[in-house]
Length: 131
Image (cartoon, rainbow, N blue to C red):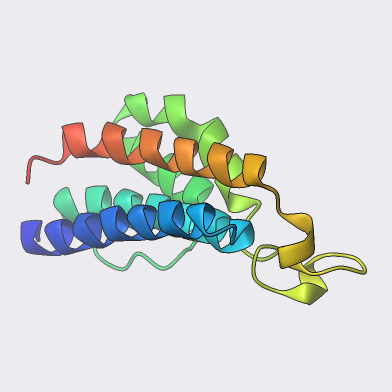
């Protein structure tokens, strides 16, 4: 199971790097989505590291709540997980936003905040998952 955790955490780190790259290229909606994805994968890495299997949800908030059942420290990241979840659909689909597209609506500040929040989650989990 630690091998699964390692794979998920490595991909989380890669997604966060891709988010940063997209932000530099002014693809802010993509950066926000990839930030959410990085956090999701890092949270799943933690769950795999403690022996969990069947991890189905994509909600970082739901995953963090599940992690908090095992380790209360996860309560400290619930609010930033909730923020990241706001980007799961609207950052990708035109019908997720009224009368516009993600590329028109998402701004540099959105990407910076999302990347920062995702980095906090990855740093937090990296300290807990000794890989």
